[in-house]
Length: 334
Image 1 (cartoon, rainbow, N blue to C red):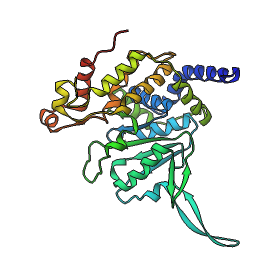
Image 2 (cartoon, rainbow, N blue to C red; image 1 turned 30 degrees about the vertical axis):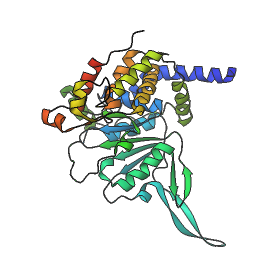
Image 3 (cartoon, rainbow, N blue to C red; image 1 turned 90 degrees about the vertical axis):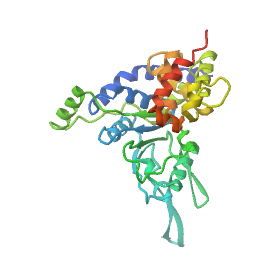
Image 4 (tube, helix red, strand yellow; image 1 turned 180 degrees about the horizontal axis):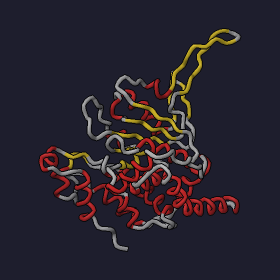
């Protein structure tokens, strides 16, 4: 590594460490509470991963995503997913246009050609359209009429799901769920925070959010996050947490075999470690701690663990299974 590259990385690390307070200040102009959800979304963005956002209507999910895009000065696009949405409505399509030497086909990019995509109620669109989004999430490109078009970088998909209305929805396949780094739950606010929201939103227009970074900064952050050191025993801890969710495997806890129908794959451990690296930097540390792993187990595993009928009969939630998993799987001794 050259001296110039080293200096750039050093500056990027310092910028990440100093960014937490500034980001929270800007978000505080429009968002009240939701500290944990905000922290997990920022961790995913710094790690370069996509996010599911689960929560009831009216909890400022769209506002939160748009505000984060403004802070990082990224192009934002919101796509409302509906049952009649077609793949071309997302990716774009070829149209016939008149040119000086005759007619020719021209590709018109769809709304997915942005940096931050809010896929609103993603589970309301058919599998064919979900598959088009899957290519964009995994390959950072779209294919139209056999031609591949690269997407702008950085590229994030933040997809919302309404956990209340399940009628007329198309559950996301496990292959697509696994592409999301985290599943972030946005819950109801405490009473005092709700009072503050009502007071703030019914009195005056909030001040504008000031951009703190740009797309080049975000790409540098991704490179720096990947270089954060992590001890082998912590990697093993992440692997054990993921593998313990798989029923019928040697060493799997009995409660997992009873309640879980399908467990997490290898990508879960990768997501845990990568997310922990980003969280460490946001917390002002240059190394990963066990607390970073434990703090991200729920958002990393809750969409990768599929419960069976026995769990439904017993009234067990996926978060409750993960709670017991954290008690069962001990950190490897150092």
